[in-house]
Length: 213
Length: 213
DNA sequence: CGACTACTTGAAAAGAGTCAATTCACGTGG
DNA sequence: CCACGTGAATTGACTCTTTTCAAGTAGTCG
Image (cartoon, rainbow over all chains, first blue to last red; front, side, top):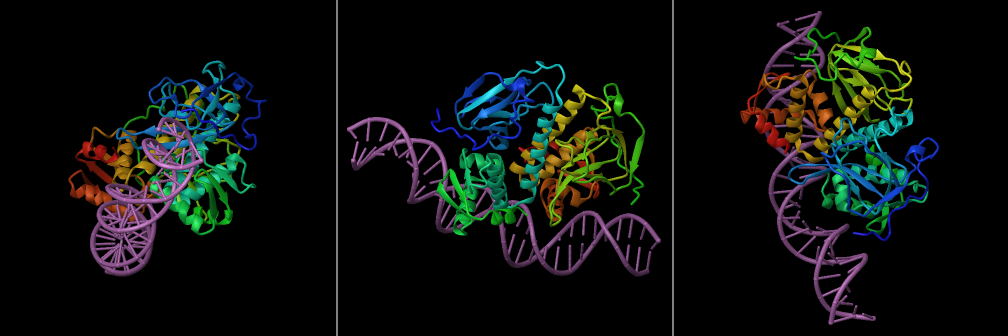
């Protein structure tokens, strides 16, 4: 379970500016890869900020099908809920460190926390567009671009994929075979290179962007 | 453009409780079917509560492809944004009446408004599950169930569809032909009956629910 | 009645899923 | 150090679903 090489982004993330989010800068709790942070049906309340590592937030169907709503990386705040019950699951993809903000520790939600919550909504809308209006290649391309942008490694032409093909497939509404085939085709088309299955080198960003058009 | 028979839900919606949302109970502005409420890139700020009619919120791609994120009906509050710019378009599906809450008219966001904003997030997550993990029949079934629940007409075994097949297709990430075919197959399977193309009578809810499993 | 738009239907083509078999990377133990 | 076992990823062959393109039908408004 312990992951010896947790994913660490190359540069600090915008939302982690410390100044506004002092309330979140408490002790860091560590979660091993695969361990649960919260489950659907749990009492909601706490918010979390990722200090390092990657977290997935997902919904689950009775038959085991899974839809990953978002991957959260350093700086991201997650855990926003409508009522007092969790509607989604959250667990660590890699070894992850989280800071906690208990509900009610601030009587009123600050404008900044509201903004972060709304970022989750904007991301969900982007994600809906990806799932609703892109074919398999477009979805994978959008995913690689999103990962690079959030890691800030676009200029390095590198994208680290801390999650498995299964996670990627469940994020994009595809099967792992399709994800794998798309990557192979992109490799053959000289759009990218796979240093290893989790380490992508992007040769032509424009080609990726055209696929999401 | 004027729609003589605006869609009006059969019963008041839970979020429209009036007591908590007094700030939203100002004058009602009327929008003709098809008219724009706001566009991507507009300055954000105002929130809207639907008094009657139906509104669609959507993202648009350069080539005209469209992903509808949500349909809003009487009682719903929409217009939440992360920054000071709109990320989505909103316009009236039918003749619609909206009450406006200008940003900043309350210095702090009330807990109640936060809860409504988070409902949008929960809905987006449900929608992601529908798009990511259901086939065409499952998506249409989920859509019919959602519409019936929000109209409160499930006990009547009736679902009014105030929007076109194109709107439904753009909401579900399908083509209009596929939506039409799925409805025809459901009709043939005696799961539902089509009084008219916009008026569905549901004969077997369990059958619909099984499709979304 | 005629024109327009929305919706439905059909046939062929493309895309993604399924099932099965390898291959690959990595850690363990001989 | 190498053989082996394990889980992850890739590849192939085939099937099934959905899209695409092209008619055709049904309402609606002048």
